[in-house]
Image (cartoon, rainbow, N blue to C red):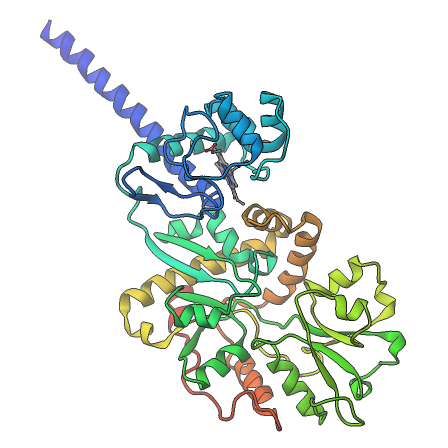
Length: 456
Ligand code: HEC
């Protein structure tokens, strides 16, 4: 008898062990899927313990399993979700999948309500849904953080777009997780200066252009380039052909749109190399128009030329109905004045800390894996970027096109800065005669310490 009980018990223990191992494996897989939700959703329990760090654009997803939709106190849901909450529409496993695939359509249909959901459609594979669900359930039971991952905060140079695909891919594909990192990506924007965020301790690492980083360094903010995922520059000047511009010499006596906040340095160097003054229209000078973040100055002919990136603003001009034949472009790369764009920068002092160096090594390794994945799977990368766009402003067409252009700029970089590119950048910047970007060759502005360790 005892032996029977023992056998039954053994069998029982084996089965439960198996079952819990299985559900643990599912939740673990679901945790990776949740990476694409983190930009908008955090998981914080009622006593304020953060289980998963994330954004606040969407409601805290702690304990949402089998609860009515739209019921997190303090979150301002869409009208549609308020209807769902009044009707007690449940977030159960079946509804969960349906909701994610069409937040507006499905809730409207289920409730008869109208309006627009504040969440866009989420692309989650059918096979991933049960895992994601298991993860949300397990995260709600956990009272402690789900993993002891080390945190890294990355500040982007600009808004969420394919320019930063490598980082979003690394997040989405779990490359950071594989390195034991929990990475928060902070989008930039017109009001955000990455160098200042870095200086203020708001981020461990930032994406910046080298001219701005070197200028900041000379002014006393010791930024160091630890990796250079972009090999080539995407900056160009885009001009109306009918203004009579065909070569750089024709730029004299014109109004040219230029971005500021540190992005003007490559332009100023170029003009200085051409011997063109930037203090107003004259036989040997140009009027510099401080360009905002749209292409209107060109379209409205307030400027003969404006600054554009090959992957972004140029296409905004084309999208406005202008034919490529009507335009003349000057790529900084072709003019020999290309300066390094999108590199990864940290504060020099932090590099004395072995733990920081170790985190950055893992971060760079995973980020480069993300970049190469994005290069090889541009359309998928563009969709991942779209998933992470909290503003919903980006479109699939534009992001896919952008990713195609970005892949040309990251091609040929394994992440390690090429000293020759650095030297050219410095030479270009030092050439700024009347208006130098930097006054002396910088020292210690880059290191291979991180990439040597990351890429070995
Ligand atoms: C770009 C931001 C964003 C992303 C990414 C995002 N969500 Fe949301 N989510 C929201 C917003 C905003 C709401 C509130 C919707 C409303 O009020 O209409 C929401 C609502 C929800 C709800 C309903 C919660 C409730 O309290 O009723 C669930 C469940 C949910 N999201 C799950 C997910 C999952 C899972 C993912 C990842 C696959 C995800 N979301 C990705 C923004 C986002």
